[in-house]
Image 1 (tube, rainbow, N blue to C red):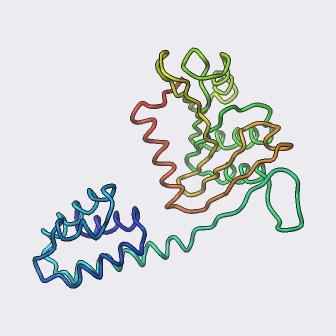
Image 2: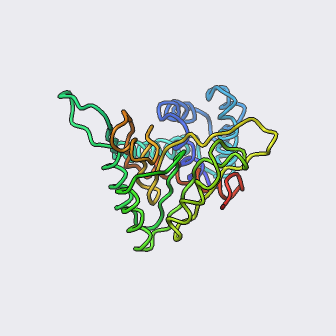
Image 3: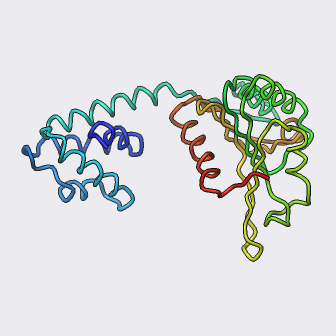
Length: 252
């Protein structure tokens, strides 16, 4: 990993104020004096020490001075600050309306996300029933070539809490989609797929309290946020993909 790749990783994982504080410290270190020992104490908790060690390893072989290494961190930090400033977050609400602020409903936001998907769409919900407008948008996404994936609660047979056939119903309703279940050993404590979210193309994500049901889209009081950010939506998409790759969730 190069010093520049390592700097980019640091600013994506850690608070920018912390990155800049350490960059100022590095700038004062004489050439050739950058070391993991000198920097670890400045970064605090053990959770980030591996990142620091990787950065220091890259710095040691970079041939750059302390000031040049600090400049790389400052530049990466400014780039990340710009990216984060371009993030747009909208409040999503289903339920009683007030005059305080105008808000969009969960169904509107989810349809917008699905209709805007170009390549990949991943939807996570405990259950999915009677959400006809959402279903119509999903059908259109599949027909235009979007890879659609679902994760829903498993049946009791597979360590979940639902009766048989729920995920199979989704699979039959959307034969062009990939459906996953989270299977756990029979003697394990009950695990529930309680997350409710959707992500499109690693660019837009909806995180919500609403299941994919008619009641949640129409009559319940539900709250969520629609996030347009390659940084945040990309992390969610990567995490869901890793659940598949690491065989934590499995195709039905």
